[in-house]
Image (cartoon, rainbow, N blue to C red; front, side, top):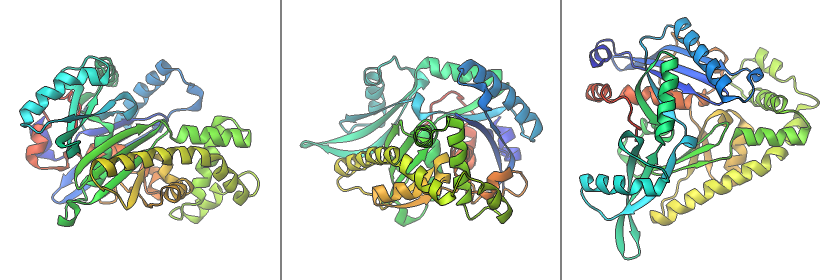
Length: 391
């Protein structure tokens, strides 16, 4: 596997099986240029309903078609376990050697996360030293997944006729979209906060330089915002979701004039609809921002004044300028939206209508794909154990 990667410099396929859609992306390096060599996106039809078995069967069939029709090379994939499937816990330990730290972490992990943990179910991050009373401790972030979750994920890949090159933890892959730009000397102490707002919830990552210091999953996301709009407008979920999407597209100045006219076909006066949607979303956005504020307060207290000046947003809701504006206002922070493929040559692939946007909902897929963007040694090492929970 390592020989194939180094020879062709084509990296494994990044596979993101989301709540409402599936994305696949494969990158390759040509000298200093990283280019996309294959991509595909497929949306779950509303007619499938909520049955997990039915949706999984549809996903398996769809991925097979995506691989065959879009020029993907190989069967090795990088995937991620979602934040909602992970147990993320904090642990404070006395400073000691890395080997001793790992032994202590593994001995205490099962009690902390509430299920048996062994082997590749667990990884951890050392967030740095903090004061606990008169003592100095290391703040450790545990990331663990139940064995049955990992085995079910591997079984799904097997049904898709794919092999796991690496299983990521979602927040680690998401942060990679920021981390790869933090190369300057002044970035060493820069404080970053990123929030990926998906359908099921929001993954919050706080970092100092290239080191993650805090992770949290908040169960407020696009679904709850859409449900609030549906109640306000007396619509079913799909109708409310479609109106929110069209309104978001109509506000996107990157879209061409012909398409903007098409997307402006909203019921009634578009300005009135926008304010109605804003009002309906307000409660959920305020609740989300309260949770993010608590995350930032914890970091400021734990790490003695660590505070960001802006928040970087990704995920499907980051495509909605209304949502971005409301979050920025509520938190009192500048906001930026991730453009995960801005440094990638995408001229050889067809992203369809996604190309007209900043593609922020491709953040997880891109973050996984960029795992291979390190040194040749890193690429070779990654071809070993294919079932690690990355941290």
